[in-house]
Length: 463
Image (cartoon, rainbow, N blue to C red; front, side):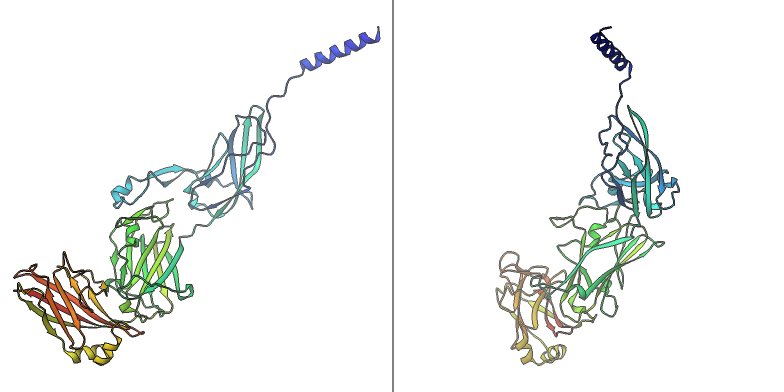
């Protein structure tokens, strides 16, 4: 046979062989992996991974969980696969949600195992059902299947399950301000205060706020030693679902617990016309009860993860609790109807005022405007040092609040230091016989080691 015929036969046989050999169908990589080798998960929280990285494997590809094991011992942990019930948001718990009935429409229930694997793509989904599983390091075995077949992937993902804390303080701060002023705030140093939370797991679901002086003595919210800020949220705004209780030592907030959802559950609260989203709670330790003689304004941002009682203690390490030294002088004042601007002179007992402040009239006069401030006490108990009449003095509305001359002004009261007396009069033709008013003004002395105050109360009647 000629050589070229031999070559033709070889080529023909090779072609027949290749034609009979089956084609390889699909590809399944031996090294499927996730974007992270170890997923960090806090007990009782929800998270997930991105889909598994296929590394060129043919798609579609299905992924299923084979088992999850303790990484150290190799023991299978079936608790991860037992469905558990937990709570989920159904909608935003915003500023308009203030009752339990409204809350029930925003929070629902779901049942799922602690871990599941998305069949298409292989994303690992962790649910709040991990709350009851011991903290530790676990590993996941998977099986992947595509047109090329199936393969087992041992230790495809490690899960580091971190012990859930009962609560956390994210931020805390404190400033001091002068009585009757919101300006010129002075920051307390971080070393001047501490914030701690004590958790009592088996107790009722309550969040308790306490403020302590440097000796551990609590300030008394029930007596008004602790107040909320007028234009800022308190914890009651974040937790409005049960009424707060003021006690001699604390403010107590019962709260609803939802497994799998961090408390407070509200994401937005509103004070006045302003919305807040930072979870901060603002309070004031009233100056009368501190040896600084200044208001102490505290802010705390805390979150609560477990049921039970959480006691938040804000300790002021450089402040001592004191009692205010307040002397009240009350006078009945009769103003004639139709007297125009004519004032009625109301004399004070000079000796009583001097004794109350612990200094002579000359000293009072020299300190007035510095360490002694003249205030109008507003209807809500706050103080206003502005003079809107002859200084020191104020025009006042029907409720005794400071106002400027003009619409709404009903009375004026001006302190005459030299005479230790007050001139009290009316806005012309605005008051009538039978009208009654209460004026409260004061001299407040900040001694540097406490507050001394003389409060003047005038029960005014027009006739």
